[in-house]
Image (tube, rainbow, N blue to C red; front, side):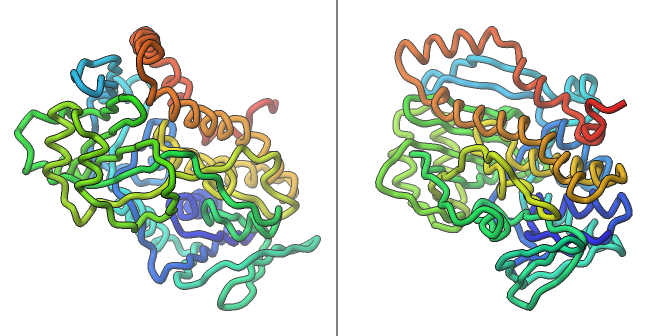
Length: 393
């Protein structure tokens, strides 16, 4: 079977690896001239690392990633720890797989290198997908270099997916009212011990600040989100103004001030966060969608890339059951929609909850201190490798 994948990002390449591992031929078409990931850090929770280890990437991940000790939520001004959950060895013991922090570029490089070693994966950079079409026996991608034919098409081409538009028509994503900053801080610029080896989220009125180590602890990745109106540029390469960022987080805790003061300003970018509501349907016949093409997810649960990587594993498993292609893709969609919609809506909810003030914030903090990581447990225990067998004898 030959699969045509539109999009050579983390979701598209990981899906190609999952499909190739099950013996399928895969061609990946990427509009950029090379396979590179724009952005900085990414969190790989056990539900996701399970898939990546299955693909044989454990040693490469451990060479590039950082293993955090846990996750914590802190009060924006006092620094008081509101809630803390251990990860590290506990995650490995409880779920069988670790929690990683890694640079997005490092993760994509690991995936692309693995794909290049696979004889049944072909990579085509500099090839923009324009649309798709299908008949009873084939599915085709229409690209800037011509039309290519295969047995099925997977649209992994992001929130503005051409495959999605070909299936369901044009519909612009919606601005969420949040603007995000991202930047990297060289760890050697910081006072030793100031930044804990955790995934840290600072909660404050109308905004929050996230940081964690990447590159084996050499860099601190920062993501800072502020409720704003009047600026809706959806670009990962829009340079940010350090003075504006400092104004947005004026009066926050000394740790936050230290991170802002020591950021590498060449890595400071600003973008408006957009998303879409969960879709009623993803695919048709021999064409389906994956990742941000069908369930773009705000970064407030650190699960966007994880959902895309899970998608690829479940898709490969569904195709491996021997069903007709359309039936296999329909099963993939039915299995994935409830989980990804839950993460989409949970991330939207967190966008509100993280930014509460006054009594609502006090009540939130009290609830968080008692929650005991129940939501994380539900996310992390998911087994994408065996999900295709759910409900079957």
